[in-house]
Image (cartoon, rainbow over all chains, first blue to last red; front, side, top):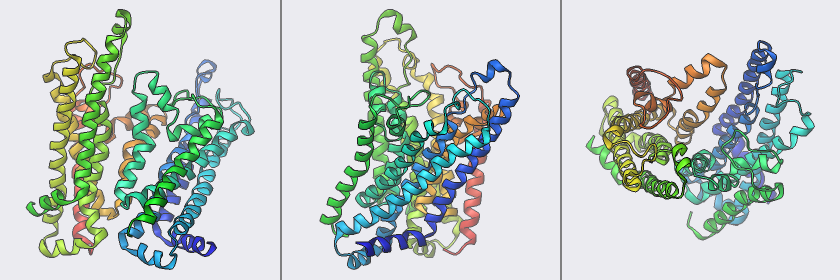
Length: 259
Length: 254
């Protein structure tokens, strides 16, 4: 198993798309911090009344949101690039147990997603706090320790997106189809759900993947398109299910279909 | 062009894309029926303030996604399989092959967008059945300019993506870049400091349809560009994307 994981890590590390994806995610953190510097600059020019209504959110949450899409593409490519070139048949000769093959991919993609996701998400939190300095923005008064769980959960959601991407890549075998499906899950369906009449916008909005981290951390969904009906434990379970169920389906499909 | 049309017509992904468009048109129908049903259950006072998303709302989100897909695949799928070299052997003049690869999906997307939007709006009118629901009650002719603007923007997105695809040559890269322009840039632009958020917002391709022709029943939330300017801007985007795409396509080895 360890050899299979090492092989997958080697593959992931050596392709150009991985570097591009991780660089884009990292560059976005920088961009978020620059915007925060600009916001801090605006804050200095405001009077007290307008300062009381001037929020920094959702700026620092955008990093995790963008990383979700980036790492989902990484997960997709881990599967579909091998199908496109036909190298998947070589890989399956080398690792003949297909569940082990998928498990190795899932370990590598999931851990990469987790590390990059946490780095981006926490980087955005710390970076924006640093940029804002001591300025008491109305939504930045809580301590970092108080805000941290939400950003850790958001980083974990990035890993879930990466695994979902891997599963869709194995199921659909086409980068185009898998990426479009992911974009639907990531943003299009939440947008549609948001436009539904109540109470369904709230109910369905609560189980949207990108809206789960806030619920896990017990934060509200104000100023967002998501709902806030789930208790933290249930939200965490739904989050895990978004990765586990598609991976289980992918495992069944992989073991039963010709490569 | 005939060759590109045959290729486009014969691959499964085209049907998948058109199937998605059709599915979202059906979703529009379902949405309209639901909105009409919901309206019936409201009191007089709440009816006056009831604001519903317009009947074509599901399509207006899905069409750009489909446009990006259809613009990218004719070029990137041939690069992925290496068939691009065969195509170039058959049509040695690069600019002609490239224009066919952009024009055929562009026209197809325009027709698909217009047809599905018309279905969505007509179904909305049928479902509303005379109920004075805002965004549903305007006569069909009032919708036509907006529907045309939407269809033109959708086709323009397909053309822009075709240009991008010739530069990037990668399905994943092209589609992800397209999605980033559609979904990531607008909220980020919203966060920019003040005169700039409005300025950047009004020049983004995803918002141009609303600026070329205002949807009937919509409140004027943002002022943005005058219709002629936004149409020119859209044309400029297409020309630049296709120009760069054609140049790269002609200059680089396949």
